[in-house]
Length: 148
Length: 422
Image: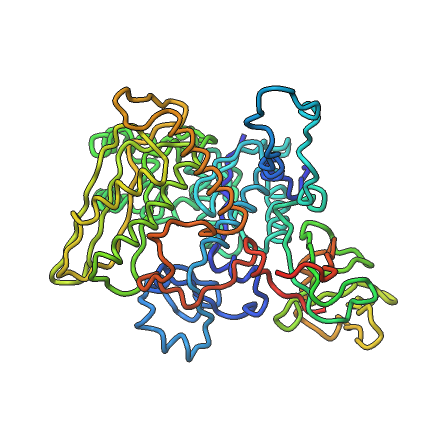
């Protein structure tokens, strides 16, 4: 039987909710030639999130993945419907917290590998209670020009 | 065709744990509004003998010594997780009736070998992988059978959360094991009467003489019996039922005794209720407000007041002035008020609106108000509840519900998303 991961009507609804402001109340007189070309605009939700029901946001803290381009303070988009295949950057639960690392296999042994020389890899044989929680799909890094 | 009931176990507790790994492997309980009593427990908390409905203040110390994680109810989180759950179910089943925040009935085609176990297992694993919610799936040929099967799946551990009553080898033995009280739709009264007739379990109920049941419980009793025999009487209702009224009410963290606080509370509830009307494209014809003291005081007081509107409306400004005018009618200066609320009644769809010839509001005024409400709703939706608010709501709310153990709104508020250590 075929299973569809996380496809949801809300994805469609979400993009519908973006209204261009100029649709209403067009002044009489010369009609705008742009009227027929109004697009709904680019919706990052739609572009970046394939499975809204199973996508979660997390905030990155720490430097261990910096060589993979994931920096302290980044916004991480995690898709839990994807399989944690080797080579993917995953969010795992170790010792009661979310941990971000790359899942690898070395000679058949699973490791959570850091992407920074100062941080050791985690040998999963030494942990009984590791759960791979989700697969990271995007990390959004602020360039610091916008303050909240 | 088969009917399955998909239902999340300990839903509130599971939602809390789903986004907070520090709680994994530990007992956890969720408290009701105002942190008053226990309304959900995870498996570990159950094993410690903590029961449902217990008053929190009575067992606070015990919970502390047992190192139980405490949570105030976080409806923003549960609502979001529920929507995700239902969307996953909808993506995988033909017809879905969302029955409650954590339950859905679905229709599924039986494969040629009649075995739906594989389907159920896959769906269960998918939901667990995507949302960390453990679920139970009960399958039968009717809704009542699915509900029973779900009860078996959940309570009898051998079945790992999945039970198919329709293909169970000895269906009668199973039905014999379930007490009459545990049948969906059998209330206390019916259960009591059944027992007085010597009917103690589901099998006996299913096989009891039709006429006897009919004299006592009429068509509802007969229907239930039919359903248990596998004949469909309750169809799946896949369309949401039209709302008859909308109620917004809250208990206060501590009793209030002045009209200023009551007006503030009534205003906040009215604003919320009007917003709900608009989001469902409804208008109300009547507005009712109420307040009451605690049920446990010797001087119990409860009062309500209503106003019928000339034209149905969902305009906050109009509804607010109606409800605030009513407030002095329900206030009692010598009573410790514990709760207040607003009910919108006689609801109509926005499109079925008739204008009143003698209304003091012009059509143009109405249109302007509609635009204003739209803008306010949009801003509050985008930038968070209360971004724009009415002055009467004020900045300080002394009486606001106490939720000392509230978890982050990890899936609905950008500033509260969880941290991942890299």
